[in-house]
Image (cartoon, rainbow, N blue to C red; front, side, top):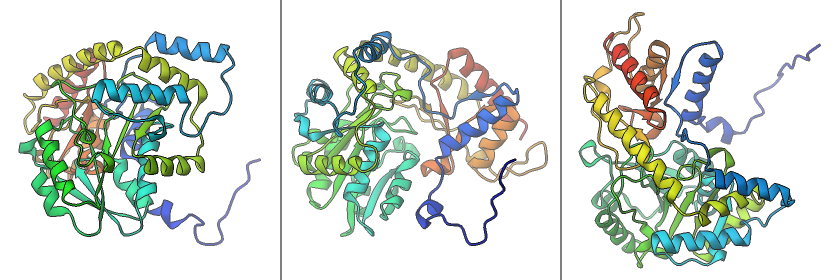
Length: 406
């Protein structure tokens, strides 16, 4: 018989965890799975996950690693061959020179980001977060007891923060800048000229570091990917994070990495050593094969993402009230949907904000999206376009029909 636990005092949970929000993307995906389990035909566009299988040559490398008994602990910052391959990748793709002692391999890019924030940010330090931002940035800063300072880009500038905005936001307490390019959730890509101006601002403020999240690097529809670390004046103050989940369709493998100057890399190694140690030995061998195999499979997936982006944009242009910038990368659309706020749903409830709208679409259209509030843009919704063409067509047909009821 199950034991019933009765709490006789206040919650034992820490203030830290009580103050932390659950990831909005994971929360919406959970609601989606609950409806699917009840038999509803839900189209899930809330998760940032490629619908492609990991390329076969990568799977084969993992099987080979198993057969060869590669099942033991690995060095905390990653196996030497993988760290060297990451250095080679940076040289080939980004014209950046790193040594293996500047690379830390982690259990996903999310852990790499957390390693950096926890290694650099002290209580009270300000972290400028380019907004809209990925949902976990602010929570990581809160965990480190820092202060997030969201800096909001405008719709007219594809939600990209400008160097002038950055200059105005920096104070004596500013320690770190966090941003992604290509951006999750907007798909915006910073140009060389834009990043050069941001680097110039940083060069005038030597206490400021930057955490550049480049996990969507290969999913780029405009050609050139520029890394902030390419600008010599700030290279030693830029920490670049990347991984395998998006470009190689390896989400479940959990493999990411960072590149930084040696003392920062060593600090992240130290942090990771007390939390997870080295990531999965089999996954690292698979990642090594991925890098050695080049970009062919990634480029093939990018063409599919480009086609899907164009397909969705062609549909949503006919949805009244959607203001949708054209994404230059990643696999999302991020429409401004405030035209629907204040409207009444068929059950008599009022759509007050984007969270209400996301829940309405989930229940009425059986399409899951994520409220923009979690990304620092409460007037928006994020839809993933990493789904099959027929699913996307049906999803946005349903969305259009449901919105017409409001």
